[in-house]
Image (cartoon, rainbow over all chains, first blue to last red; front, side):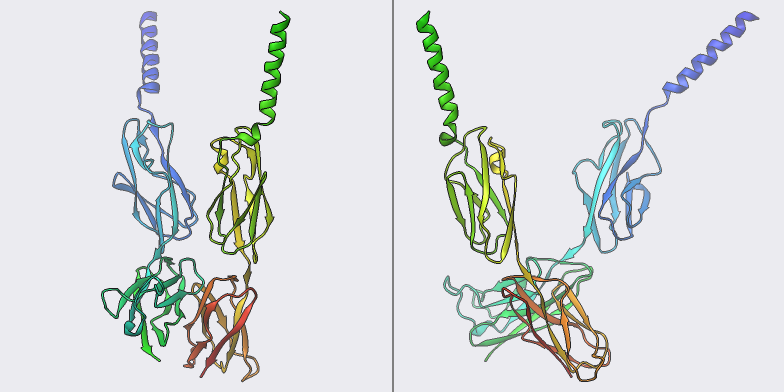
Length: 212
Length: 196
């Protein structure tokens, strides 16, 4: 009787010990977020386990933990409204759980930006493009960085040319294109020159030049 | 024995002399990285060197080489006209890493941009300088002109171009004239917006 009791106790202890150390270690699949000021961000892990991350969040954790040795792959399924998010350290968004002490995927979001540009037409009267006269006219988008562009007459003899400002415009920002420097003996006017940038590039600004 | 002491003493003297004058016979090129310099007039000094830095310079390398572990000291002798520069990492012990760390960050003075709207009777007028906007309400006294000014100042020498982003809701059409140019070294408050 006493003997079986001891044996049962030993078996119980062994069972407890096994359950304590036998299960694999698991890891939170989580990370940090900087600059998230709009709603709409959706993250996935291994193509599922979607989480919606609200505006203002600075961290996230997926509902399902990863077991030691499981692969995780955090991706941005949907960008927030008017923003673009990315991984601020490449390579940390996927890997094998347990490879690092904790899984921490750093995400950074910023306002999306788009190109602003259009066409100049009627450049027949522009001086030929030379080193002394490299440009015909200068257009500006207010005082914005990269918002000043000098435009040359095409060297192939064409009287029209496309242009794009080097400075992109943030989604939701206004833009306004004016001719800062007119060509000699011509006047250029702008149509479709002002508006608010939305979710796609704007390329319909038209600068029309006519002889004075 | 006595000769040995003498020789050792001579060696010590020699070593300390070398250490003392090491500054002049350095081998490291001291560099200052310059950000945002749009104006002439900046003069930097480093040891015996005086360097006049033209507008739009991004890197300055001082002619006098510095020795390892010497302390270098870059200072601003004269600020640019209409801009203010500040120094970071300008005083450190020289080694191959620190001699490229000095930074000169310059900010061009900026001024107000604005003007007057005449003939405005309706609400909803929005004037833009690129991404900077100002809403203008009709005057409380009918027929008076309304002063406006953009919230963001514009840097000396930067371009500006003002457009009508939103016309008044009552069907008036406003036109900006005298509306583009280069910012002077002072407020530019001569924009004219006329509404009909």
